[in-house]
Image (cartoon, rainbow, N blue to C red; front, side):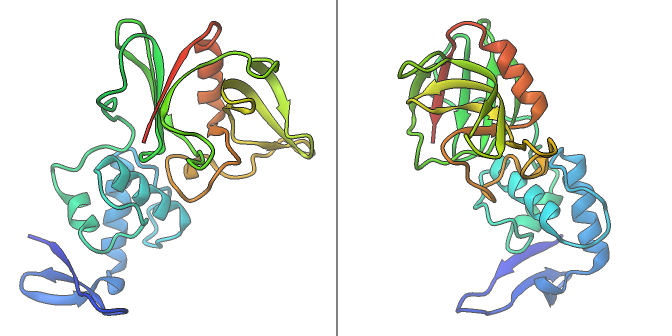
Length: 234
């Protein structure tokens, strides 16, 4: 059985104990890295190409795995993450239980600690779920309702930051300016400011709003044609 152990004190090496032999975790073989990437992809964590190179996309996938499995989110396969990933009990990244205490009825539930949200119909069925990027500094846990705030429209198909970005499918639900929208796109060429695979991680922070994929923003737009409850939990 493969286990991972952390040695304390500053830059002490991380080790993997395999059949009684200890090797540094930062010297995991290419084959082990590929095995981790394959496993992450199988669990719906979106690690990208299985190339044995632990780059930003694999780190983001690892963060999503850690989030889904209630682990510290640091994007590193070291420590206990590798063994938890390879275990039969590992939980998927893309299918998660709705947080307890998020109420009932038709609603959107947003977990800041998981960087994740759920769209739930009146019968309690999860219509869709997926990763987000938010900024907990701006948005407090609590219950909100989508719609106009501070005299501003509740929904704007092509919102703008007043500068070089579009905030497409903007659905307001909190304060005067906080809402859901697609990852911002450049007005000049329509490209997103960052990739979808960063969603569901703490690798980026928004300026108050909740960034989602284009597809998810379309779903939220359709889901919020009327006032819709939004429950934010930590």
